[in-house]
Length: 116
Image (cartoon, rainbow, N blue to C red; front, side):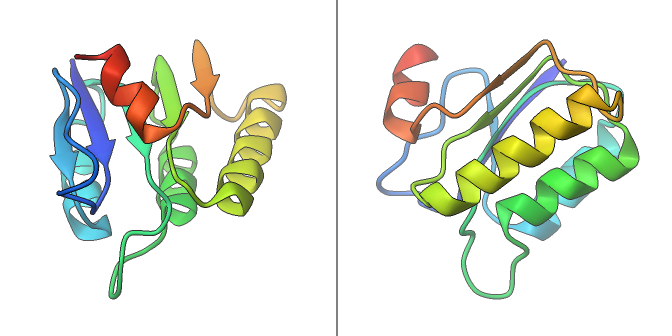
């Protein structure tokens, strides 16, 4: 099983131990497709820079594909995006569209410390 950390900030946010880091939507979609049944945890930033889909859009891809995950975390500093993504994921859980053991919105610094 792999863990994915989606974040384009290579200086301010180190990659948590045990995670594969992707910095843009193309890298994420490739890794998602290559490991569709082998993903445990994904932690998403939302604002991934120019020429990249946002984290919210990547979460939608995960939901569309129906990937089974244990854990999704939203670590973006973009509070509006975190709140809307969190609500969307909770609603998808309630409707049985996606199954998660755990859904959190832990800021990046705390999330990285948790896995250090």
